[in-house]
Length: 139
Image (cartoon, rainbow, N blue to C red; front, side):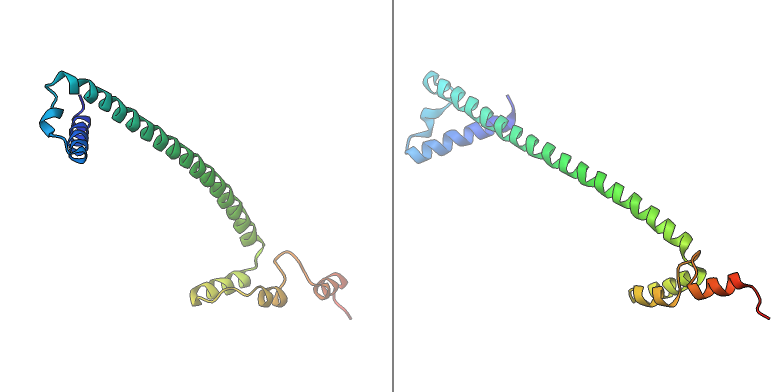
């Protein structure tokens, strides 16, 4: 028999006996009358322990499933952000990257209005730039 169950049973018998004011010697394992009640108590204790164990295992499995789903979502979000970061790095001009690095080092958050109004993203041109480039040299 498991030592923990034996100790719990012995504690239960002692505790119940003290509550009822009975003599603890009447609840020993040697008497045949108390032997049957001890077995019944053992069975109840084991059933209760099994019930607690099954509830805990169910709760743990449920929590593991929730955490697996969260991990899956975070991995997908991380992948999406890495792709977006890579795309932004390829589209940004060297000046924009330098300005961004300087802002990161100074600890100030990058302001989207100053960078977008001062310079367009790489690969795009303003209408004035397009007109001067397409008209060629003027005489």
